[in-house]
Amino acid sequence: MRYGPWQTALLHKSPIPCLFPMSHPLCLCPRCLLTAVYWVSEAVPLGAAALVPAFLYPLFGVLKSSEVAAEYCKDTTLLLMGVICLAASIEKWNLHKRIALRMVMIAGAKPGMLVLGFMCCTVFLSMWLSNTSTTAMVMPIAEAVLQQLISTGVADTQEDSETEEPRANRTMYQILVLSTAHVFSSPTNSDSLYLLLSPFQTAISIPEPKKEKESKNSRYPTKRDHMICKCLSLSITYAATIGGLITITGTSTNLIFAEQFNNRYPDAKVINFGTWFIFSFPIAIIMLLLTWVWLHFLFLGCNFRETCSLSKKRKTRREMLSERKIHDEYIKLGPISYPEVVTGVFFILMTLLWFTREPGFVPGWTSLFEKKGYRTDATVSVLLGFLLFLIPARRPFSRAPRTTAGGGSTERDPDPLAPMITWKDFQNLMPWEIVILVGGGYALAAGCKVSGLSVWIGRQLEPMSGLPPWMVTLLACLLVSAVTEFASNPATLTVFLPILSALSETLKINPLHTLIPATMCVSFGVMLPVGNPPNAIVFSYGHVQISDMVKAGFGVNLIGVLVVMLAITTWGVPLFNLTEFPDWAIDRNVTGSL
Image (cartoon, rainbow, N blue to C red; front, side):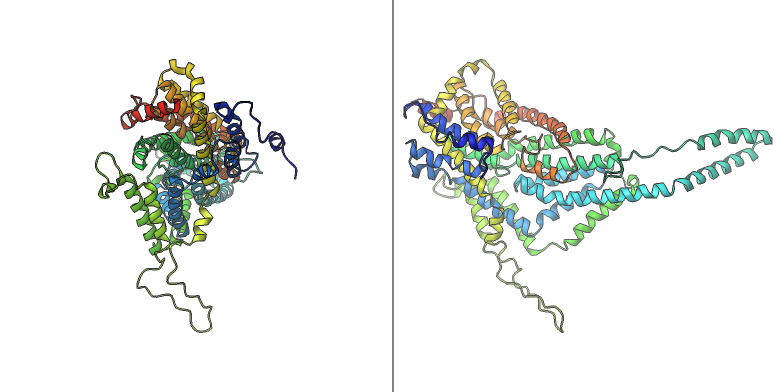
């Protein structure tokens, strides 16, 4: 096997010897650094790198093997498994496709509204499904619409070239008729007829302006068609990123933050599905609108009236054909089926149970139980996910389809007790690599806590105590959003969370003031195809180049950081009580220093 430069370097340095005694915090630095380097460099798969603490900590006496193993399966793991069960049912019964096509049909086929419609449906789906799965689902639908747009554009171009000469003759004929009528209706002589027609004959000889066409080797009829393809493709990956911010289960980085925060501050009780949604939903709405405006300005220009009009009189032939294509795709789905209804009911029920568990302003449904603190969001997701394996996919008391008679092809009767999803459906979607990666992050954080490494790092950052909290948060957001362009989002956040927690405790800042913005900004790796999987999926369709992604992604990155800073300094302050250093952080700080 041939190793790359990273593999060769790391193989000769692992395990790293330590010059400090076991009781010193820096004794853990080489072990943590090794895991962090593996994550950032991706010399080995992320899941494999996350297993490094599982053997290094017991070998060097940092944690027992049983203690490390317990870190690899937490409450968020069960939460993710329940959500994946629902996502598997959504995909299996094409509910996501029905939602996407319906929203695009409402938006229309005008370029601006088409982009906005796809962005809205992508954001909605990405709230509940992973960003990668959402992009992989929506992008084929968008590609079918774009291909219809391109094929119609080719037909229009050929039609324009064939009818250019008759149109010129027809225009000359109309002018001659009108001019002649004007002459004979006025008291002029024949000389004035020649003088009157001469200017029109000169004007006719000037060629009409033609549409700006791409080169002959291009697959796009016009440059504008290419710009529409770029705009729509990039809008989907950015919308998937924005939608993942809204819910605590929307992306793996949100889950990593929630579990690490709850492990580090068990007495906080401030991060749940409801509080996260209230904080992040306005961020997503503002980012959605600003990102749409930015992409429209960058690729479609500033004429919003032309590209966003809902009037049927302004629709071109190409737009009408695109709408017909979307409508035909929706008709192919047929009437809504029983499994889709069941999936939709479970989807709504899971959301309502999450919101009403501990809403904060009124007692939640957990108050009906005698023992408190036993039920979490994972309890709801696992319960409903388990029921999907039990409920039959066929409507109760419905007759099974019979086999065709008379020599025709026979259809096999379906199993009347077949469940909504099978274990294979679940396993095809379950991101085990992310589960192990999240567990490795928990193990790494546990090692830092036991050794006192996080406290030591916090003390080294004491010179930053003179900065105001918003400046510390802004620097953290900029640093995280820059690093995540070249490293994976989960790995970047797992490395930075313990450092930012220790920094907040040292500077007596509410840890949420830095941790929540950093968690959101780590998702803004949108400038390169390697920034995240949705970028790579969109790039593979060939409509955009790296220069397009860098140019558009820089604006989206800037929009995201500014909106997150606006949120954490306005409605985030009363929601999380950010003006005070909380008691749960004081207790953690005192315990860590001891």
